[in-house]
Image (cartoon, rainbow, N blue to C red; front, top):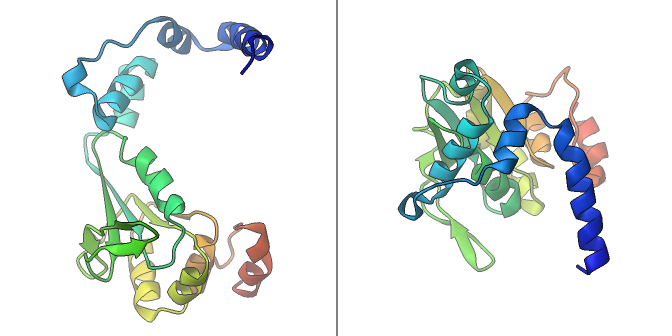
Length: 198
C-alpha cells in the first residue's frame, strides 16, 4: 500500500468513527490489555465482547447462562473453508461448545491436512442451538444421497433452534426435506439443482 492509499484509508476511518456507537468508539480508542499468557481465541473474543457490550443484558445475550450446543457436519469431499471459517467464529462465542460430527471420529483427509470429528452422528446431542452443514463439490453429491446423513439431519433439525448451511450445503438440507416451503440459496452454479430439490 502506498502513502496515498494509506492516507485515503485513514481519512475513511476518521470519518466513520464519529458514526460509531459510543461503545464502539471507546473500544476503538482504548488499547486492549490482555496478559500475554492468556492470549488465545476464546479469551480474546471474551475481552472483545465485554468491551462491545452496552449493558449486562447485552453481555448476557452474548454469554448465556446455559451452554450453547453447536454441531457442524463434516464429510469427505466437503470444501474445508466452509467448515473452518464458521467454526473459527462460532468457537469464539462464550459458553459455547462446537462439535464436528461424522460417521466416525477418524480424521477426514483433505489435501495436506485432515479434520477430526469430535462426535459421531449416532452419539451427537439431540437438542442443538445450531445444526450446520458445509458445502463442497463431489462430496456434497455423496452426502445428499447418504441415507445416514439425511436421517441424522432430519432427526437433529427437529429439535434445533437454527438449521443452516454454507454454499452447496443447502443441497444436503434440501435432500433431507428441511428446506421445503422455505427460501434458500446456494452457490450460483447449483441454483438449478437446489430448485429441483424443492
